[in-house]
Length: 376
Image 1 (tube, rainbow, N blue to C red):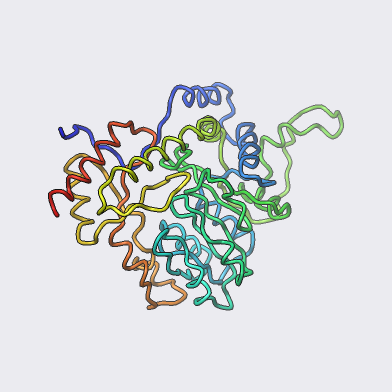
Image 2 (image 1 turned 90 degrees about the vertical axis):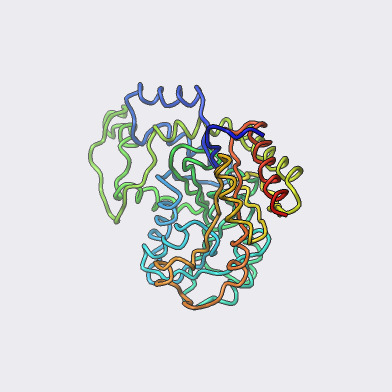
């Protein structure tokens, strides 16, 4: 097969004229900050998930951080899986907590309930359950013995049916290569009204939004007007979503079912056509990543081989406990992670995104199979 001229990315967003039109509408409206599009997106996303409340923020990471700050989590112990992105272990450190990294299931790479139970401490007040690659984390199993606060990290599961409903709250990602990309952005969904009201004000230094005060009726005339005065009674931050981002999210949301259907098509073709040396990952509704496994001695060579064929791959993820900066903040320094240390050595993520076509899929399958044909 002839080698491509242009690199095939492992992940990539896909936009079209409807996305351009959505952003253009906001630009022409003159309201670029937090306003009606954010309000609309929060309402529609809450309905999608089945939660009472939704708060649009700048990123999944800021969402998790904001929840911890709203709960007053400080100098505690935050449980999280070692197979995850750096944010999962770093955000507890932002809040002066130790990061209680635990091992994972050898098949789906999700947090392991038995390892959670084994490494609980009296300070284990918060647990971050990541739906790895869109596969639901075993929150029900953890609930059998753990009564702390659970943040369900749904960065990879937008949208898996039932996602966001198992934890005490959920955080979502619309980062540039997620299933519903908008460049960046996140959402907090929850059913706790008191926490919702607190979080909402914390997104902008404890100040009510300008949009809400512009649309508030004057107390004397009863007519819409701008109420300039406000009170601030809590420490807040600056992490609210703006209408430019929300407009793109709303446009992408309309196309989400079709985009997920295509990702599952890529998954099906890989599952059916890759050679037997490639161990298939568990089924994912979102296929945020196609995290295959190959024999350890071949992983890095395969990555280099595919790069030469203009195919970009990745590894999701290097275990968090292996990073020196994280080791300084571990709840249990020096402990072993037998599953993650073994399994991650074979992990390789193959391209899966909506900018691919069937020829691209065939191209990946051909060269992966060709590698093992040549090496074995």
